[in-house]
Image 1 (cartoon, rainbow, N blue to C red):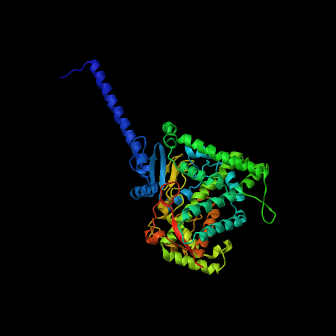
Image 2 (cartoon, rainbow, N blue to C red):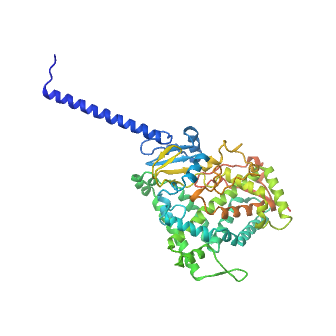
Image 3 (tube, rainbow, N blue to C red):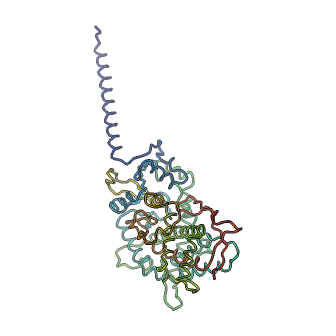
Length: 502
């Protein structure tokens, strides 16, 4: 028989207790992990520190769609230390943007937008609360109401006329249609926002750099303790330099509005967005202080949300029509019937062009202006589709995947405007199978303003001109490759040879 000394007995007891504690802690950890695993959405395995970032690839909208086919329409990724829900179906999108809209109405704090938008004082990136509600109310009622949109009808008509004149002078020659449509969008927005264009000051080019910077990946937004990498790489410096450059321009615009009034041909004083916001700023009865930084942030929202999305949608719509001659012919026949030989199709006739509206919807479906809608963040713990979602969880809705979901859309990858004829589905945020502008509280408030700009110029382009590709290239060979970026734009410019229809 072996007899242990008291010290050996103590050591053995200590070892036993240690082993028991390890087993107990391991059991509790495994139980807790299993419980959390069960109450959390499916999640692909990640890597230390970066989480699932490596799985996003160069085209995140497609990578996320592919992952969702494996892990489901509600999927949890860890982007650095940020838990992020990926929504890839209409059913889940409806739960997020309707059933639990208030719970998911916040925005995450993002480094670059915070620098560029005066501490996120705009509508798009500001956090949910009384400030955001007041600001959105001002914008919806005073800048983007139906009556206000109508008041800029003359601006739209004149800018469409400029596009038609430029094409008329270039008939038989190659034209960079992408550049022309970009100028149309920028000039129309400048006149609505500022009362005049600013081409000479290079504002369009500055805005393009601004949008490109907005889409730059910033590691500090997802792994805060590595934010020094952004400063070392120069991203912070670029953002601050761009912010100062744009701010200097906006300050000069606001100061210019303090001393000048614009008179139209009828001798009436006309107002642009800066005038309207300045008027609200001086109105002490509204109970909301509209700072100059907020004013400038709202104006930036108009351009960032409007210029790239309207331009890219226009570019894609015309590209699809050129690539699909049957659809082009059908739209031209409708335009000829509505136009009746008049010099242009006026804005008030657009409501009668059902095929035009179907073409615009189909272009928006295939080429979502924002393929990944701006991220939301949960304000509280939410039970979503049977899963427990903690507070401060980021949510990204893959509108690109939803708009191309083959379970919703027959021949989802094909351009078929006819699918929207005699179809009540619209882009106004009530149909979650079709989300080019989002939905709910965080849906785009300026969609009507943007769509009328798009419809008016497209109707008149196909009414007045035929379009061919240069050097006898067949339309079926038109390059439709998408570029990577915040918005989905053509990788190469659309070059066409216009010719008059009559």
